[in-house]
Structures are given as C-alpha cells and as structure tokens.
Amino acid sequence: MDIIDRGTAFRAEPGSDLQSAAFPGACVMPGGRWLCVFRGAPAKNSSAQQTLLTCSDDEGQTWREPVAPWQAPHLNGKPGRFRGGYLTSLGGGGLVATLMWVDVTDPSLPFWHEDTETLLDTRIFLSRSQDAGESWSPPQYVDTYPVTLCVPATGPILLLHNGDWACQFELNKPYGSSDPAPWRHASMLAFSQDEGVSWPLFSVAGNDPENRFFFWDQRPGVLSDGTVLNVFWTLDNERAEYVNIQARESSDHGRTWSEMWDTGIPGQPANPVSLPDGRIAMPYVDRTAAPKIMLRCSSDGGRTWPDDTALTLCDSVVDSQTWKNKRAMKDQWAEMQQFSVGLPRTAALPDGDVLVAYYAGPQTDTTGIEWVRVRP
Image (cartoon, rainbow, N blue to C red):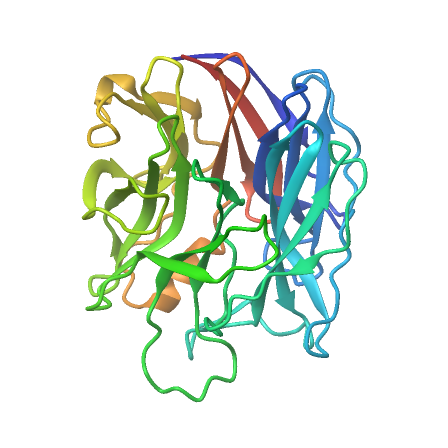
C-alpha cells in the first residue's frame, strides 16, 4: 500500500464558528465526485454545532465552500440540531444521508452527563438527494421502535447484498432516565426492506451480557462477497482501559454474528473495505503513544493484520492524548472530549484506491478535515 495523494477538505478557521471541524464521513459517487460531511462548531464540545457538506469534482484538489443543507426539525416538541452525518451512494446521482439529531432544549447541557452516565436525547433522520448532493429532501425520522433509548448513529446506511438497507446505531440511557440500573451499552443494526420507509427488523452486533466490555464505535463494512465485517473500539469497563480492536462477521446480511475475535491491533477502527485483490484494508487510530492514523491489510478475512502491512497515514501532530490511571467511565468520556486527531472514515474509489478522511489539528478546539488516497 502506498500513499499517492493527500490534502485538506476543510481547514479550521480559528476564532470562528467553524474552528472545530470533526467527525467526517466520506463518500465517492460513481461519476467521480467526492463528498465529505462533517460537524462544524466553535469548539469541540459546543452545542452550537451544524452538519456541513463539501464536495470535490477533481479528486480532492479543490473543495467547495461547505454548506449546511439540512435543517433539524423539532421532534416531539423539542428543538434539535444535527451533530453529524454520513453519506451512502445509491448509484447514479442518488445519495442518502444519515443524520444524528440531538435535543438542544437546554443548550447548556453537555452531550453526556458524567454522573448519571446518560446522553442527551439522540435520534436518527434520513435525507435523500437525486442530483449528487446539490439538493436534499426534508429529513425523515427513522422510527426505531421498540428500541426507545437514545440511538446515536455510528455510520452510514449499509447496502446489503440481499437488497436490504441497514442503519447502524448504539444504545444509551437518556437524560432524566428513572432507571437506576447501570448503562448497558449495545451496538445494533436496524433493517429496512423498502429502502428506508420502515425498519421492522433488528440485530445486536455487539453487547456483553456481563456489561464488562463495551463494543462501541462499531464500524461495519460490506465486503465484496457480501460478508459484513464489523470492527469495534473496545473498552474493558471493569479495568477502565481499552483492549485491542475486536471483530466479528455476518454471512447472512447482518442478521446473526460470529463469535468475537481479537484483531491484535490497538486502537479505534474505521470501516473496513475490500481491495481488488481480495484483501481487506482497515484504517485505525493508534493511541498507544502520540496519536497516529494508521492502515493495515488482512488476507484472511480480517483474522490477522500483519505488522508488515502497517502504513502511517497521519503522523502525530500532538503529544499523547491518552490519560493514565483512568478509573471510571467519566474518565473515558473526558479523555475523548480532548482528542484532536481521530475518527477516520473509508471509501472505495472506482479504480481500486482507498480514500480515508479524518479530523486532525494542533489542539482540541482547532481541527480540520484531512484526506489521504492510498493505492493497493
């Protein structure tokens, strides 16, 4: 694997409402257009956020001025803002955007409450485009009933080989919950057989019945043979430390899952993608020291990721941002809120290259959106 090009999709604007650009989603259209969705805010932990869209028609050499094409509606009488978004190409000029809505009834409240381990009410909306992202439909609510907890989206709609769509999300306790039980995390998929009109079927992609391991930030990828390979940033909640990236696969379009396996890679993964030669590529954030964006390849379906395939996509621009002696979940969240490098996303290019987008900057509240093109 070789890096053949890199660039900036959006440069941070210090002192502006877009000083913090983070949480990117990358998408490549059949016609060659690259699109990037990201969350812009004056500071990483600010509720004054918006979900922005930019695109490039010359393979990343120039990018349009970002726009905010989606207006967050009220939900059950509550005002909201979109905290992030992800795009899926539907072929031709078709796109569907997965948008994460967050309740901003009280903008002073933090996204996550460290004492109660609860999250602001978080829901999923979809919006569609038929003209390669030039115009968009009004956002449509994704009804996840009977799942009624907070459901932050973890990535784009997956187009499964049986024709179904899969919507990915996590379970969180909402603010104001009267349930005294500890937060029980799960990564889930909802399935639609009518292109997003209804979502009657669900599967649990990651959950530990003992509640020791949190398989969060799931990053499922649909491989060329139809297998869904799901990889997880995995927290040992008992020891308050991260373990290696865990993985599992589904050979029946996400309905059931294999046992978890240890990839041997430390860090926070991006969605895996198939390469033309049958290998699988997976970017990830290595935080064992100063944070780096790395990429490795697997030739055995994701079971092993040899050291000699490791490629550095982004060397450290900051010192280590990993805390020592973390003791509780609130320490994990406080640590995450300080990250200024992370969350890579992957998209396959028509010629077999891989596009990786991520956020990076010199400090927590000053980050931009970078991209790297990798050739197998």
